[in-house]
Length: 115
Image (cartoon, rainbow, N blue to C red):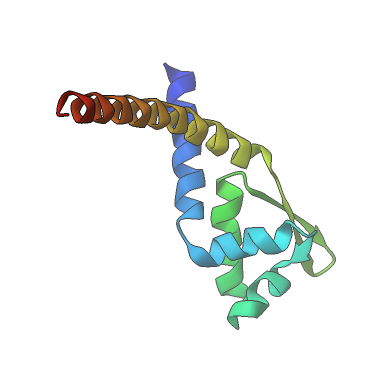
């Protein structure tokens, strides 16, 4: 039960982080390699503090890790959290595909019986 609640909290954090287009763009930038917090905020003309706030949300979700090198805060994409969300989405994709297949069959039966 505790493990399930922990997994739910992780998924909530991931989906919360992904709900914002700025953070999704930051993840896209990180998919090409490490970036500083300043580099992540630059496309949005965002202050370091503003970019850092978004990065903290991504860190809490486990999507990003940050290291400090001198004065630079370097961010790296952590794909494991995305894999967890992907697995959750794939489960429901399979469920809905099965339901849509059943609906299609029912509609065909109705159409065939109406002839």
